[in-house]
Length: 271
Picture (tube, rainbow, N blue to C red):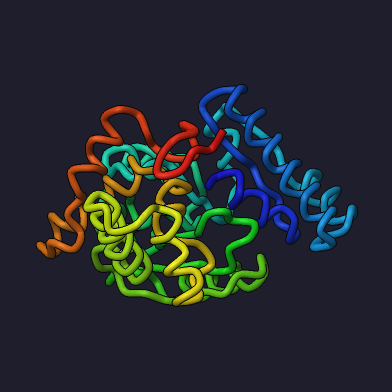
């Protein structure tokens, strides 16, 4: 998600610093950005000048403070773990300017809770992108009771500039998108576990019958079963709705390392 957010920002004129914990991770991100741009050129979606602009606007860092000390908008895209997000946001708050907006790419965790560790919670906002970022058009902007109206307006303007359609959602468990998407995904896994239909046919039902661009099981593979398991547990704990309770099959697949595309096996084989 991080390299995708960096790409769409850089190719639309922003100067972007991308941070990760190792050179290997950064090289992997750089390769993915370049591959995405080449595919865009091949399909006539972008021109070579856009690729050149994007790469010119992107810099890669393993030094956190160096990467974000001069930024106007900071967006974290770490896994769905509140303690981890707290550590990242607290660190960013300490090394950025007072005006810097602090965004979180969380898909379910309360923005109010994320904002608790920063000195000025009014500049914290949810910036929930969708995978793959360079293709998916939606940006879910999530505000909490203390979010400043000017912060919301600036992030909406950012969304427009990077060619995303934004929706504005009040801070609540799962927001709008994850609450709907995870409920559908968990039911699809239950259906698959019960032998109602194959993964391919369950997905085809939603793609052809409801015009979803991708089926719920393939989407779970793309997002990562471990990520969706964490979101499901969070929503079930906070909403108490059994629709969000992760099925036993999902827990078993995560335990054995079948996490979807990133491990090359999930509900589909990704070899």
